[in-house]
Image (cartoon, rainbow, N blue to C red; front, top):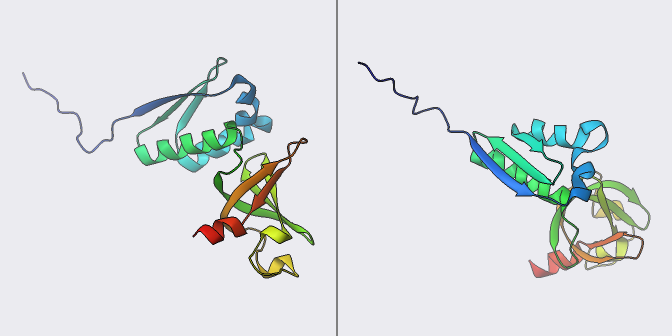
Length: 156
């Protein structure tokens, strides 16, 4: 009797399980499924969300699986004051730059927090689409997130 050998070049599927707050399921799915579909498209991972907040992430690629989990955590975890995030500039005003930390989570880098030196024009320092690290310096009573680019630059 001849034994069949499983392809050694074929990657083994991985299944990771994480737990999220059930109140964050809607944010993870996004309007019309846009957010979850974006994560799946970007990582190639399969994602299954249960009503109890259990999220199953499946992939044959460990790196892509971890990337999907990181994206899920960014969307579902609360923003922490003092933590450093990578953000992307979405809109520029004369008083600062509005940046996206995660889908649906935007914050403001006030002009006074953009650079160590005086900034007359925000676009001298950042442009729409720029990505850089920021520190969360506060969240006000209305849930608005205040960010600082200068505090991250000083610590580097």
